[in-house]
Length: 348
Image 1 (cartoon, rainbow, N blue to C red):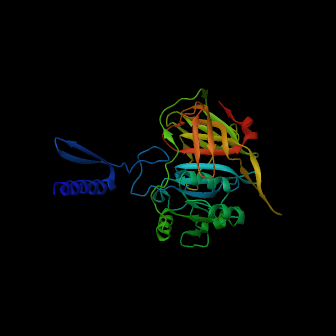
Image 2 (cartoon, one colour):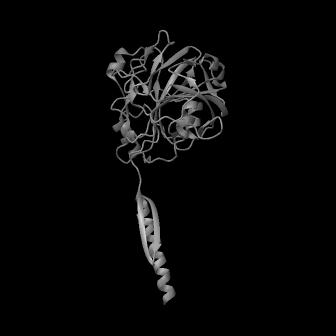
């Protein structure tokens, strides 16, 4: 009889631990024959993409949205200053494209865009963040990549309740197809309707703290593509880098259509080998070799060299000694550029 009672007591303790653990980390201690179970509350305000405590609600799955970033369209982009993380690389023909990543759907502004088509390098980064990937179509070979990649859920321009044509952009954008936009409420509703979890499915590969570089970097000038110059200028008062387009001597701030400049705490520059991924009778599309490489991490007015490793499923960034790279708390703008453009990178 005593053995049965003991088994029942153990079973009750296990059930209690399981139930209590749903809200956080559970710790069970026994003192003098008395058992106490405590649950550490999970910090739901922590933004995994920035290290800041500015999250609201319970949703914490990142959403990565493709945004046109052609020179003629800059200035006609809704909400781009609101993203938590950015990636910029070449789409094709030396034309840059941007991926704006938000820590959750409820952080996406009411208007964001223009939305453009998917490209393989962006898909790999979105997947490393466990993000829902939002785009407005793609070539057949890119659709195959999306189809065979875990944790991606495509939302295309055939769904007019999620993406719609903006009247202002239709009449002001340089080309008619740069007028498709979306909004946070619509993305959240689409995720729920499609059965897409709004809870994080991966640990974001960023570590936040304070670490100074060995090079002064109040002004950072680089090429994101062979014909696209970008300049970041540091404001010591805010600790932020403002994004500008063009060379340092004549650059202009990149602002949203609402008039707000893109500002970040970190600029991450990855250099890799560019190669032809696909070619047809109209276009040539490029990708970048996966694997290890080097680049630079810029923050707090300084720059230092880092190492990285990219795959179709993951991204890791480390200091040169192999320890996790330390990012300044705040937003990050990441460039994936052809390693032949490394000589065009300058700090001052």
